[in-house]
Length: 210
Length: 210
DNA sequence: TAGATTGTTAATCGATTAACAATC
DNA sequence: TAGATTGTTAATCGATTAACAATC
Image (tube, rainbow over all chains, first blue to last red; front, side, top):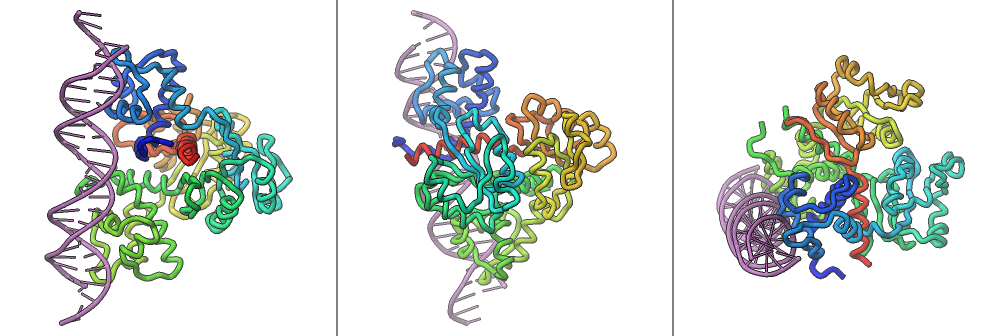
């Protein structure tokens, strides 16, 4: 569907553009040039123009970019103008924290249910009204609901197995907080959040500053 | 201290090497060649050899790399052979979840205290034995304890202010979960974990697979 | 129209991969 | 010693920056 494949480097900058444009919008700024934006964001104006032109000419010579339009366009590119139904695999501390985080819902990401193998959690409580089901009921639930994304916060020992089950019942993407690289069939998206690896990078950077 | 500045690309691969070497070690594998490792990790063997040689010649011609030694060396490079004392700024769902995560402690990252501005949390409970203090007591606490890292999980409206206070009382690094780019003095490390941006990248990738 | 700023091409820079001599 | 595999140099590839003609 995309003309030319857009590089990963460009894509990972889009959410940051989106965030800054959102702030500008909230400040009531109507238009901005690539140069002004580049100063705010500490990147080059060239990069901004190059990046945006992968997706279309959103600007206007002599004027710059209309903040609200560009914000909306990037939101569209990122798929934020749709609702995405999610389930949480793992209702431990992190799983519950993510389910509790109401801001995702504002962007169209809605957690519909949580699953856990711990009977002490199943059915005993809800998180922001979200029920906790047994992991055994995963396939049944998926049959009856239109779920696109699974949020995996379970230990790596079981994540590969559950990942296979999710793929088998039609999940489209896995947001993976397990400490492992999931092996999924072609066409299924995995986005990793490896918290301990992030902490190690921080630790490395601190070493250098000694 | 480092001879040549090592690129960010190389550094962000180190934790992943560390993880795979840890797994090999647990499997009882004694030695591994860059070629075998490259197959496991789906990267080129050239890249592995190049990356490692930024830090020293850990291998041996005709033999490969000794798993346990290399694991230890990378751990050392990442600063995992030291204890790092941390405090949590924000004792909400995410802050508590991170405090509850015992695995960080295994790697030498120890959360010593939590801080929050919500009086309903302060002093009323502990998380894994970790006390929750008022954010007003931050400076006093920092004076009496040897804290290197702050884990920021507060909303962006207050994160910039608290960040300034942390820097003023000698924090070395901030692990930032707030949805903003912190502006800190030279020499202080910031490692961002922008969860909503990660989710947007996932969303983008899903669009492409339609 | 003149000035400003984009979209886009060309130049530079850096990172990845390939190749191979050194060496265990 | 012969075979294997590293460390490292050279070649390639891709991403970033600079420059400028197009145009609002």
